[in-house]
Image (cartoon, rainbow, N blue to C red; front, side, top):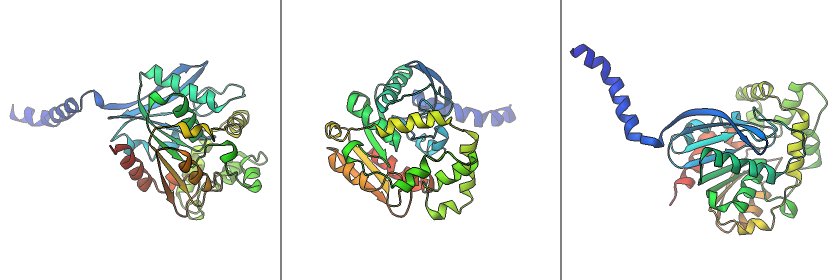
Length: 291
C-alpha cells in the first residue's frame, strides 16, 4: 500500500495544483471560428487576464513562438491568423484594416471574451488601433509595436525598401531571404536563428494575391487624427534600425495617444521582438501588470 501511495503522490500533487489554479488555467487550444464570412484559425493558452496578439503583413501565429510560452504564464493568450494568411481563409481582396478589426471583434465574441489587453505588431498595430478606437469597451491596455497611426502621420519606408518588400522575381526562398533582410539586424541575419526564420516562412507560404490584399489594406489605413480619442493606456515600442516602419513613427504615435509611454530599442530592426524576446517579453509583461 505504501508503494502505491508513493506512486500516486506526484499525480495527486498535480491535481491539487490544477485545482488551485481553477478556471483561470487553460491548456493550449486551437481551432477555427467562422466570422464575417471567413474561417479564422486561432490558438489559446495560459491563465489570467486575456491578451490578444495580432501579427503583421504576411506572417501568422508562428510569429509568436518566442512570446506565447512566457506570456501564457501570466495571461490567457489568444493568437490568430488574420484573413489572407496562415491557416485562415484567404478570400479575394480587397481587404481593409477596419475589416480585419471587425474580424477580431467577431472572434472575441465567438470565444466569449469581453475585455482584453491587445498587442499588435506593424499591420497588426493598425488593426489594434482601429479596434481600440471603435470598440474601446473591449480594450484594457494596448501594446503597439513597430507601427504607426497611418495617414499624414506615417513616415514611409524608403523607395528601395518598398521595392524589396514588394519584389516578385526570384525563387520563393530567394524572396523570403530578401524580405527578411529588411526586418532584422545584420548580426541576426548572420546567426543560426536566421535559418529557422526562413524555414518558418517556407513552410507557411502566403499566396501573392493575399499578400497584396493585406499590403493594400495597410497602405489605406489612416487613424492619424482619430488616434487622439483612444483612452486605453498604451505602450509604444520600436527599434532604431527599423527600415520598414521607421522609428520616427513611434515618436509621433506616442505623442498623439492621450495615455502612452514610449520604449525604443537601439540597433535592432522591424521584428526586434524575435531578436531579443526575453527583454521584449519582460517589458510587455511589466507594462500589462501595472495598476
